Amino acid sequence: MTTVLGLTGGIGSGKSTVSRLLADRGAVVIDADAIVHELQRAGEPVFEAIVEHFGDEVVGPDGELDRPALGTLVFDDAEARARLGRLTHGPVGLEMARRLEAARSTEAALIVLDIPLLFEGRPVGSDAARNAPYDSTALVWVPAAVQVERTVARDACSVEDANRRIDAQLPLDDKREWADFVIDNSGSLEHTAQQVDRLVEALARS
Image (tube, rainbow, N blue to C red; front, side, top):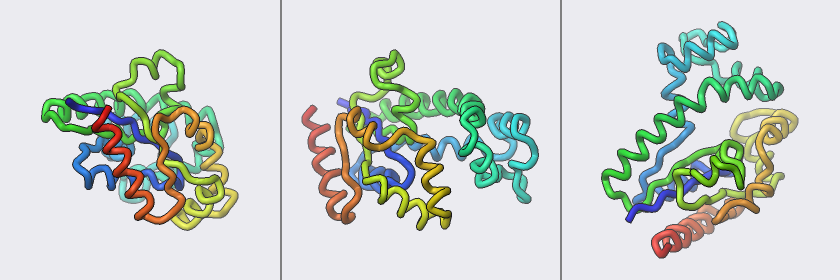
């Protein structure tokens, strides 16, 4: 029997680390961010739509999408973020659904849908949440201060920029209340790995 887990987190939470740990334990991981990057390559319909809406300033010297430039435009503008979402969410959702069906056909025991904005896209109690393609959800959580610290270190940005990016998403403490499982990634890698092991065991029993 195949179990499908929706995995989410937030900027600086270390969700990618947990995703890799799950893959190391045999899970098939379908990464929404990776699909976004694929569909936003030059020449792809999504790329063309983004350039049409946001202009040539979001195209880098290499002809590919200039993600930092696009990020600057959307992080401070809720309507711009919404426009970008409308251009990308549909194609990304279709591709994720295609890959999910392909993974199901292999009879994989655990499939992980790695979706950064899982709760933003499927609010708890909504029809979208009730009809979600996953059986349960897991949140990668860290305290807000750790989110800021890690975002500054990773992106070489200011504390103000880190806070602005984090504020563009729902707070992790809110998401913690909605998730079926929570992985506290504020400690050592060993501690996180132990929690991932317990998660895999719990999912196998369900």
